[in-house]
Length: 224
Ligand code: CTP
Ligand code: CA
Image 1 (tube, rainbow, N blue to C red):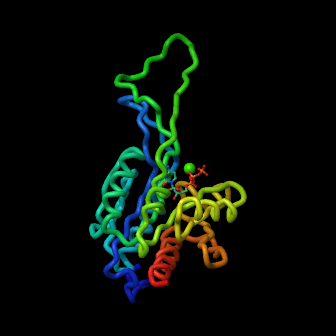
Image 2 (cartoon, rainbow, N blue to C red; image 1 turned 90 degrees about the vertical axis):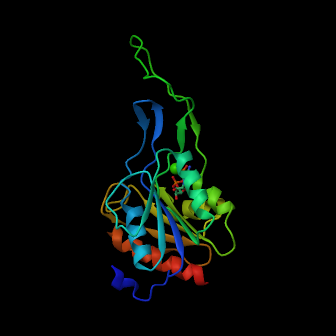
Image 3 (tube, protein in one colour; image 1 turned 180 degrees about the vertical axis):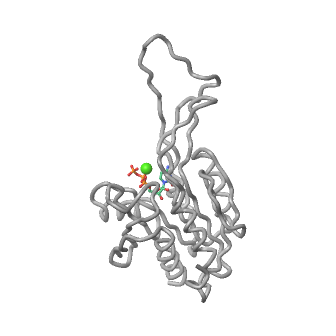
């Protein structure tokens, strides 16, 4: 992979990437999560390293990764946000590839939740902080902020709305219902949405290859 970025376009840059699905505790033995494998975030970390960057991966899912990449393992969304905010103080690029849980349990039980007869169980959920939006709003002029958009309809329109709302420079949009895209697969099919360029449709390919395309565009955005 190093050969793809022979010119090391991210040399001297620090890139912070999130990966995996956050886990929101319910009680001491249970949590809410999603189907994210973390593959896209880990592939981005390797591609950024190959491009010469110093990489910090804030991961909610543990996978094999090259030792040159610093991994900070986190559990829930608020923990991920705190780790990201700390790292962004010295970063040039943020890439939010994690599947962040939109909600968490309002009150985590201190003890294992028990069944009571055959009653319904209702979990009270509250919204989590938006990590990408928080980073986008706090962005320094030369920082580049990248998010993803998981959509099932109106892909480009929804991605453009997220770009604006979260003050991102690039949104990597994927239709998660489409063949060869989305959760827990080795391939992805994405559309790259920026403020200034026409949306770029990338043909379905390996996540490792998609990651290289994203990192190449990030390098362009850093110099433009
Ligand atoms: N994201 C985040 N923090 C959240 C929710 C989402 O940082 N609490 C980030 C994701 O990591 C991704 C981007 O925002 O980079 C878009 O996530 P997505 O789930 O597509 O959009 P949401 O803003 O959560 O909106 P919705 O799920 O309602 O479409
Ligand atoms: Ca969401």
